[in-house]
Image (tube, rainbow, N blue to C red; front, side, top):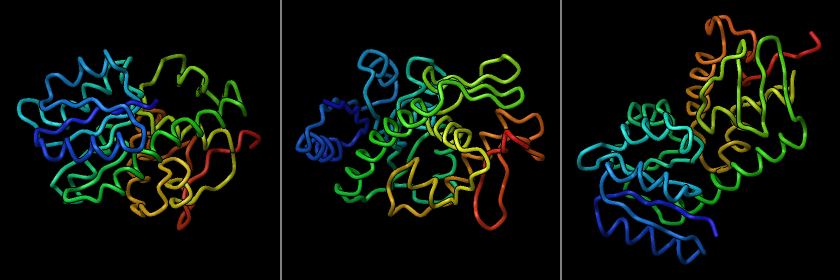
Length: 235
């Protein structure tokens, strides 16, 4: 039974999410403030965290940063939940490692769809890549899908789950061009979400982590007007 940790200081929001998730068979735990989330996440190791931004004490942004910095919790998908709908706020959430972002007021059906999609895609993308290649090497870059590890010049690089999934998918298909919409569908798994900027943000930060010169990338190439591809290892 998949487990979800729901973090929100508003009881009616927690109750609404908990009711709808439990109705679909999820095991749901709740928290009201940021300080307890890291401890609960490490104890529970949930399949996903729904994390409100506006929390007492540590806000959701800081909680997300901490979770992504800890090896045990770095791979847990996080959906950020907030009344803030500005593009800057959404991008900030994605930049610090959130996998998705939904604004209040929200439809329980939409949230449920995103929860299902995030958990499903996390499993599917990883399984497809592991079955395809145990290790992927290109130049000084080494990807170990079965261990969720990426090394550059022998040094381990910390990636968010979505960054890892994007890199592993592209690298497992060198030379193949993926449109932004295709990456949204295959990695995020929610076809109605057409925020292609989400993909660009993740690619930009991925390049900063794995490329010696992010402005002149040698691994992830931009195909102008279409999307991205991984450098063909045969070239």
